[in-house]
Image (cartoon, rainbow, N blue to C red; front, side, top):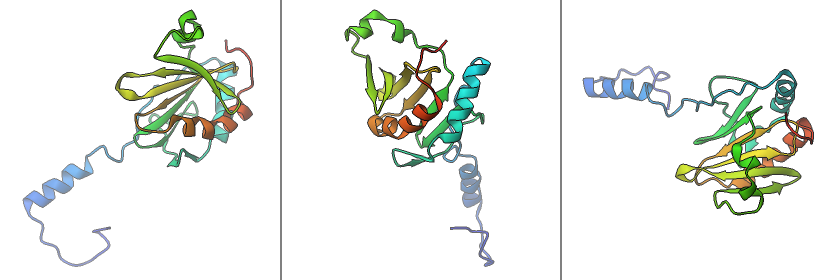
Length: 168
């Protein structure tokens, strides 16, 4: 409800005024923040191409990009699903225990033609990083969200903008 639309007189007590002030300063509507990667020029160009074709909704959540604004990051929902393009190779991607299936917190797999490394994070969140693509794309999925739906929704854009290959 928009209180400023109605022209009635409302008597406002100090407690009500304080609650409005506090609510106006709350972070409920603030964007999440995401560290912006620093890829080389070729990777940055591919990431900008990805940014242009990312979906407006992922797993039913609307797009709401994190701060600071960048063509290398995107977000959906709240708590936010965060995508960062042009990240460095995660150490577990080169770990032989992961490739053999001996790491309970990291698993390799694919969804709709995009290969991923899945890493379980503290607190129940998951981090996915593309594999076998020219640029590493990282997607963080908060606890309680269906990660398969997220990856299914992102796969077409990643396949379109980030060619298969080995990232530098």
